[in-house]
Length: 232
Image (cartoon, rainbow, N blue to C red):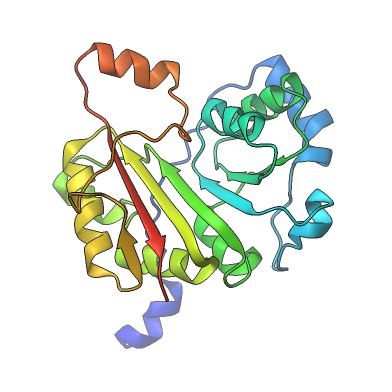
């Protein structure tokens, strides 16, 4: 069998490892009772945002929202926007749903699936006002850098899904990954760096500070934000 014949059977390199922690009773309840209303099942059909949210407000997509605190706070603070969060770990999805319930959010939906597949099969071209990827797995060992989600092909996909003038906001607490992100963004055409120094920006007010980040800052960890705008 030739290499080209083997290619369709090669496993796609994932940017995550699915280690499912134990679900709390509250998270289990959220998946059972709240997901049918606030969740979006993965499918091969493009999402109709107006139908999903019942309005035509701009949609921001977050990839890898963890336990959902930052995403839920953004949805609470920006009722004029709709938010969709993608997370592969069910405990995090359940936790985010509980926050949506607590904050009485109507402008937030979650998807429990691989983000790359969702982007490719469910998100229309130029349909998003923005995308955000906060604190993705840094895969800090050099041999694992190929697993980092921020790669040229991924950024190209983001470019095709974000409307002209829309944003891509990245954040990490690993300096090496921040440097990698910046290098990747500089390689891909169609983006304008909003940084005055053409590298990183101060944390914008639009990204809430979580307990995780506050704890890291107290320990002396840095945080790097990158904000790029799509240009045609």
